[in-house]
Length: 105
Image (tube, rainbow, N blue to C red; front, side):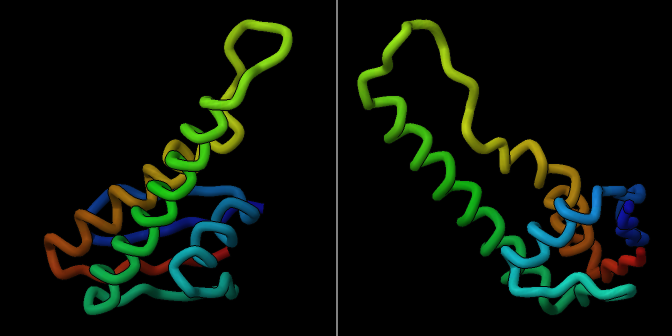
């Protein structure tokens, strides 16, 4: 199932339900049939999401310091920054324009 995020500040963002649920959970929100992040909440939500992305990237760098067996490059364990990018960009634009973000299943 897909979740569509909308804001007058940016084009629609469509995410798989699992991804949307995970990202909303990182900012302290639940995925309901309909929901909103009002412009007053965006600064904190952006800060929380960016902090989580930074934490994951730091953990991945720490793993890169461990000796690897078999040689070669390993795939990143978590591509949170890539999965979060469209919603994070929408959030930044909505904050800049004092717009709300709404979603629906």
